[in-house]
View 1 (cartoon, rainbow, N blue to C red):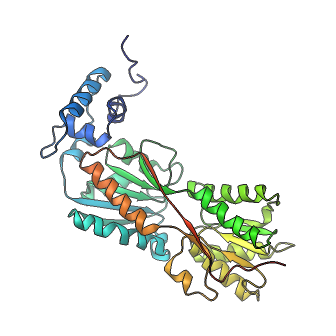
View 2: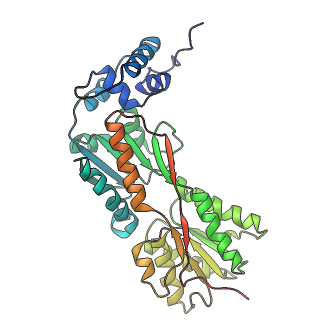
View 3: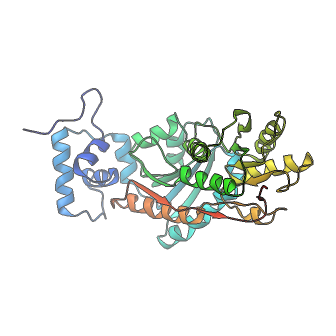
Length: 345
């Protein structure tokens, strides 16, 4: 019996061929377009050609034109442009990417995109990039979907629901839960959270889920008036903390799920006369450079941004060259204890 073909409700894509052959989408493009200078094992080439015949695949001209021309250029696309100037996390990622790209003689183009921008594929063509490292992905991003459908080599920093994309992330739930467990271990029972971004971002949802899970495990209530959502900026952290402090009772500790938001939260606390950690303990997330120079120095979760950048560059170069890459990789986080969290009782 022959294997079932891809659904006829849509055209067969190169992804269907890649799945059938057990290779990357980029490898499919190299084989079917007979790209020059690419060393593809004969067994792999035969599997791709057999899969294409079985599925009656007709190559997409747009994706094919992208695959055939190489410019030794990698794009780093960052939706929500304000994030680039305010968050050292982005710069640490670039710091990690640069030596890997330099060693392989690839050029890096950074694109800080508007949060509502959707023409990512057009930007990729204008910059003549061979592939894209993409961060800050969020639900319903049509521009990202267009990049995926075009077959451009792509690595997402973060976790996407669409498993067709090579993804690189940390375990946001586990890291957030460990941060909250640390606060619980200090004796805190009244704990709030400033979520760093809209819940359309999967990382924000996961960090909130980790917070809730740790609170539930400690049999502590989660008060909705102590949960506020920021928008990746210091100003939004300042506002969110003000809203928490305006509630009838105040928490003894607050987990801000990135350091930039925590900076705004700290300023809000100090301007209102609250001592940190004497009155309210404050936990961050990311371990940006500035966090160790605050007063008090920020206790936070170390997010290995430079290592993420280096690994993202390595994965993307592999995809561009037609090398199969793991679909999902995770790097480890750790707690960095400084001065902003104190013991209760």
